[in-house]
Amino acid sequence: DAGVIQSPRHEVTEMGQEVTLRCKPISGHNSLFWYRQTMMRGLELLIYFNNNVPIDDSGMPEDRFSAKMPNASFSTLKIQPSEPRDSAVYFCASSFGQRNLYFGPGTRLTVL
Amino acid sequence: TQLLEQSPQFLSIQEGENLTVYCNSSSVFSSLQWYRQEPGEGPVLLVTVVTGGEVKKLKRLTFQFGDARKDSSLHITAAQPGDTGLYLCAGPISGGYQKVTFGTGTKLQVIP
Image (tube, rainbow over all chains, first blue to last red; front, side, top):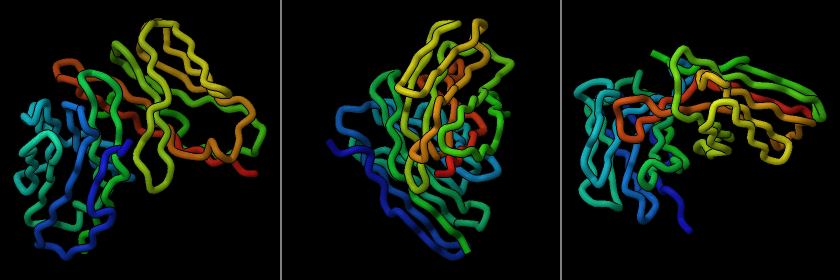
């Protein structure tokens, strides 16, 4: 079975550019989560969706970050404009109900 | 605010040694989970403990949930190089649907 799929795996961009990260959750899962991982702050929850509806976006750093889930099989996390401090590994995870989280392989973002 | 503190932060040991990793909080958790993350990959769930005082074993790994459900430990017997990775504890935050916070992490290196 395919796990959580994220693309791209690596992204290098320049400050001020728009960045879009993509996630395909595991089929049948109804919850989707976006996390960010850095050395300084560890793994932080940015936003999560339940049945395609955003439930809690209190972890989104600022208005430059936005996330959408147009259907049960696709979500995007967009940063516009990007800044060097946004450099991190971004993980998407999915789950069914209140069960275990399944993480994707992550997208390593570098903003120059 | 980081609700889950892990210790030690880093651990480098020889193959065959035993070790214990701790996860502490001032808050009570309904359950705690342990994940292992290998370089370039997302965290993978190892175990969930739900009852105060509960002990679970996964081959050479022993997980314990504190009686007061504020702390947990992970003990590895006769560590192997394949145990190398980042170990993360995680627990649900009240007031959110499946809103999970992660600990600060323990980076383990097992030297052959």
